[in-house]
Image (cartoon, rainbow, N blue to C red; front, top):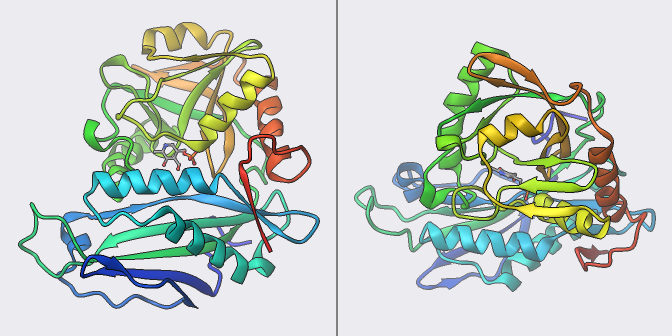
Length: 329
Ligand SMILES: Cc1ncc(COP(=O)(O)O)c(C=O)c1O
């Protein structure tokens, strides 16, 4: 299988917004979009997206994980960027249609079909820096992706950086600019310290990495930052907290500092949560030039237990008591 995100199904869904209304969505052969060079998105970054997965079950049908929650998050992103907000039924319907048309391309678990709804402002106006794009294209790409852990769940090394990942007002918006803002510091950290990612902790407040949420897990507690506008509200984070509560973990959602983080990693496991990797183990932190192991530096048993609880639901090996899956086919 090709690297994550580089292989695409040959059909995608599109809808256009103009004159105050969305067109009827259509499924089309995947092809380049034709955009005016003055399109708002190219100049003023009016763009947001989502990322989530559909799984193939042994019955041959697809199951989309947390479709309606991802649709709601995309609506919040569109709202914060003053882009036309797609109705939930429109966007969910487009995702379901794409999965339906590409059902045969969903690989067997642990591989899956990654879904990428994208909304861009297409208003042709390079003088609209302070005006919203009232024209837009919404499309949904599908991409077969392999098992993130195919090479084994190696523990990651993170740089603890006391700088923000992005701005407070866009932290919980899934928009390209946030990734652009995190790219420079992340590349610099990789080069300078040989780390995999940066854990952004502005003024000592432990937030998240460039593309995943951060959790501390002991035998009886899961600790992660409480929701605010400074970071992306991950669905994996939310799912792990709900499953963790059912498994008897105390769920602590509250702000915590780098000082507390450094204290806790002697005994707590550290993990990154996100759609791509579910729960990735963190084996070491680099703080003020010094490398500090998380416990013994190895992936821990609580991560494995929680990841299994989540994947069993996604793969159809455990009952979906939360109504997280949407059946397609
Ligand atoms: C910045 C950021 N934080 C967290 C996440 C995890 O979110 P989710 O679990 O919904 O994939 C992602 C991935 O989408 C992300 O890009």
